[in-house]
Length: 248
Image (cartoon, rainbow, N blue to C red; front, side, top):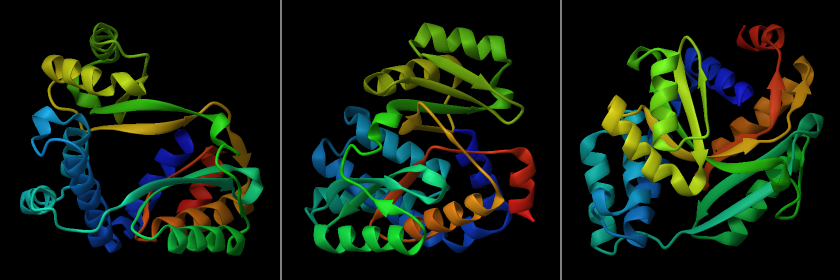
């Protein structure tokens, strides 16, 4: 999703990711603990845990933090978290999916609903915007892993559905249920990827002007700042001209 990837780059340049580093580490560690609790604490025997660890490493989470999160699950420590997905509309009619992991459903629902209403959006029922997205697996490699043809051939052999290559990276998508198998096959051929995770891929997008983009980014930032929110996905599209204005 072009809008999201471009915005992530702007956030990085502005130093917002650095400011939220500890919060990001905490969310990634929570995912590792939950994944380990739900299955085997050995990443090689637990696909979800393996992907969670890979994502944590891609964000430079220290090895001791990862190991501590896994040990916490083995010791039966920590809260029991419930995974809940919220759906709604943001400014400009953009569809928004909010994935949460919470130990208090009422608190999280209240906070998410309030955040939407205070930032020009409205929370809907489950399924209200989900039909505008498809669940997919996404694997990202740096551009220097190989040229477009090399990566495309490896992706086809691995069972992937699509490859989007740019000067920065190769983004490979596959069916959500095939993510672990495709990731393993690509790793054997191309080496370890930068990230491998499940995403919500929009089937339709909404173009935003500068005002709409600014309001939507504010909504996403406030949502992502919540400790219960693991990730936010929206089906927005922003022109290069508007993106440049946002980055100023």
